[in-house]
Length: 261
Ligand code: PEP
Image (cartoon, rainbow, N blue to C red):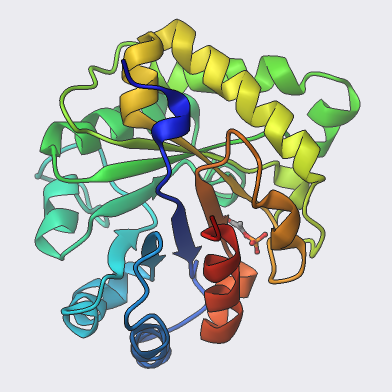
């Protein structure tokens, strides 16, 4: 019988967003490779601009750091100008892909129907782990709708997705009001939200699949100082880090702290 507490591996994922061009990405990836040489306490991944995926993959060869993308399209190929398929990400060397980030939901009006199609396409490759972002807005939090919003987003994103074998699905709980603000939420609030997510996943997939295939990570203004409060939470499988991942040293400190046993 598998138990939730057997999931000891922590995931620390850097989202570099559209902050760095090719040359800057190459330079930061090299710094990461140096900094994380010999680090084997958790799963570290970086998600650079799509422009730099293949070069970053080359740099990361021989290191334990995995590569991720920030988006994907749901069709495999064809007349979809400007889009990139899941197989293309695999070919570029990706292991992870962030889906439905709140910045895409806000600026590109991405919705959970589209995110659902993206998850399906990603899972079908059997070679990529989706990092599915969910989280409430400030208004939703203020009007006490957080729990409903989280369950609703999970249902829309995941209902009807078949999860087989070793396929991992990471749910990133990212309260929109905490992203990029410099202030993370209280660890106890993250733990509460992760519990809601865990229960919703039990309903959708059953406890066995949930325990084996799903991970829940937190994202929103994590830095080397506040990370300490997130270390011993029961339902915390790792972190998605934006701003603080743009400095190799800061990110390394976060990774070291969250993987402390
Ligand atoms: C994010 O946008 O995924 C994120 C976690 O950003 P930040 O750490 O900058 O809040």
